[in-house]
Length: 300
Ligand SMILES: [Zn+2]
Image 1 (tube, rainbow, N blue to C red):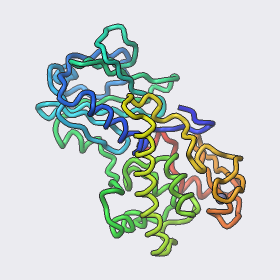
Image 2: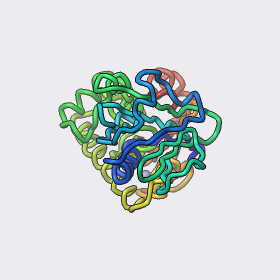
Image 3: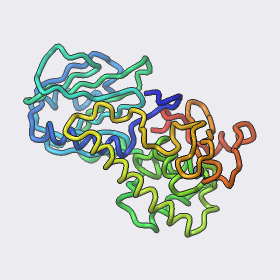
Image 4: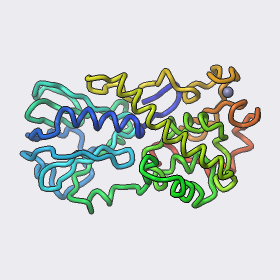
């Protein structure tokens, strides 16, 4: 999805709300059959997709930015929505629904659509923990770690804060949008190198990261209510800096600035985060090449 001129991949808060909405609807339900209309979507051959048919949904999991639906016999459907993939839920079963994939359950139909022509969404069928592990980029959940672990991971290499926070091998489920919000809330520059942070700054970042992820998940929950989250990754009105280039900072009124690289854009407030300095794109090019997140599509 384009959000202003930003690519948006669903991140932790969005995925959490998706998983909760799916839990409410299909946990315990039997999976009847699936219709795949886009061959690129399915990335695995064994176990065959048909092996999941007839099985009940017994659990869910989030794996980085992927949604995992667990079935009887430890079979899993693992969905990555990437930028333009979206899920939709219909109470009634119907063969007339459109989408790349149509999943029919006892009590309704789940469809997956992908806007545009990028064809990046993916579906894997895997078996057991080993199958899931093979798809796990390895990043850890900030909500499940203590400060020492956070500091160790963050400072395991000396990269920019922007890159380390969004590195799916370090932290799970943090992408371009929420990392902007986290760094704003922590009053830290996206370009600060992780090993230059003081212990107090690391602690502040740890607290703020957890709070932002929890707060946004809660906001999305309230927004979604009992509906299926159709607009989970639409532009977020309440964001302070992300997607707000040129608009006033909600804290100090300075103009929100941006750093553009490839298809990504990072937004920050120069007064709150970089001591008034504007981070010019051109002079940053070397740093950006070495120490900046790759494009959203390459991240996982
Ligand atoms: Zn500001």
